[in-house]
Amino acid sequence: MFTGKQKLSLYLVLLVLSSSPLAFGQSAPKTEFIPYQSAKPIVEAMGDSLPQELKAAGNLDATKWSAWVQSRDQEIRDRLDRGEEDTLTNLLRFGVTYTKEYRIDDDYLVRYGNSSLVNAFAQSRADDLVRALAASNPPAGLAEMKSFLLNKGFSFNTPQQRAVVKKYLLDNLARLRDEFLKYRAQPKDEKRFQLFQDRGISLDTNLWPDYQLDAAFREMVSQGLLKPGSIRRVAIIGPGLDFVNKESGNDFYPPQTIQPFAVLDSLFQLGLADPATVELFTFDISPSVNAHVERIRKNALQGTPYIVQLPWNTQRPMSDEYRHAFVAYWEKLGNQIGAPVPAISVPAGATGTSTRAVKIRAQVVQRIASPVDMNIVYQRLTLPPEQAFDLLIGTNIFLYYGNFEQELARANAASMLRPGGFLLSNGKLPDTVASGLKDVLDAPITSSVNPLITDTIFCYQRVK
Image 1 (spheres, helix red, strand yellow):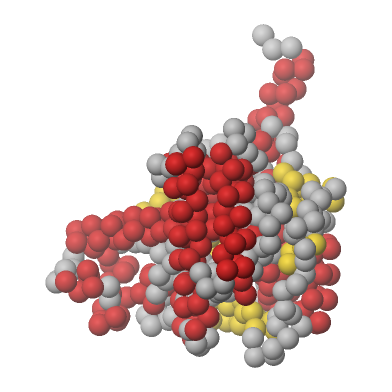
Image 2: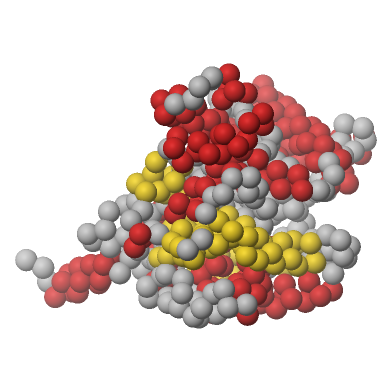
């Protein structure tokens, strides 16, 4: 028999579960690889630009397509490993919790290997980082990087083993330097939306896309594309795990995911979604991201709020207009979903960083469904019409792929949207083959002191 307090606790748990996105009686969405019949128009239209393996396959059929698409899916997932290497290298470049040495900004990065000064403090940083990683109980972010290294077969037990780790860190620093130089040399034309198709897939994020999405939502409202209360089901493609990002990233706060909550905050502020009924899903191929989302969900079901730090790089080149608008957004970010709390102090070494923190209410976190392990390029959810999404968001995602993969991603996104629903991205997607999505709005924001450089949210609508 339950006591009165136990009955009340059980009732509250059942109430929370029954109001969560995946309520009783509603099965979890099923993931499938894009069927050959859906991909066939894209395959036929792409012709000579198809991946070599598909060209060599001869006459494609459903069986050959299924084998190829599953193989390619695994290749993409394998790129996460190199993305983790990039995160570790950014930790080496920018970390402030384990060293007092100079940070390796972009100007220093390009000089690494050719400057005795840069080489010296890169060596010092690597020594300090190895020492911090070898500690028995490192902080959360360092612990994740240590686990990554241990899983790759590295060890910290002897001086010789630690020297091997140091060499690995510095080799990756040199690789990142070469990739940065290659990236900087590329023309910033239409191909800039595919600049990272040969790079590892990183998880790091920052607040710029969230601000740009907020501005795009407001523009969509002003043009009548979004109506009050029109957003019921949302999915974030690649929500990210913020930790020492590539833009002067910091390591003084634990890994966190921000975009799902920034999007909800904007939707609530504009009256586009009901906090009591909105359902938000996350799609990601990263076990780390999915585990983090699931952990904060389970904590929320027990009534635990989620605290996020909101740091940004004040030294980023930007116009006065952009800075003023961004700061206004940043100062209010989280007001609809939580309350300000004292932020983790910015260490002295993290110059040019401004931050604040928000405690997100557990009831808001509960609106997030169990994370879906899904590769938007080759996979989709099979959804009944009543479960189709009103809004899909993918920022800093599609630039990791080429034309063919972006076409497939566009088709997969279209299949999961309700008629009239929207896909928003800061990457321009090709439309060689009719996907069911039409371009209805480009929302550019001039972010730099150079008026020719703009950040754009591209808005695609599912044809009714």
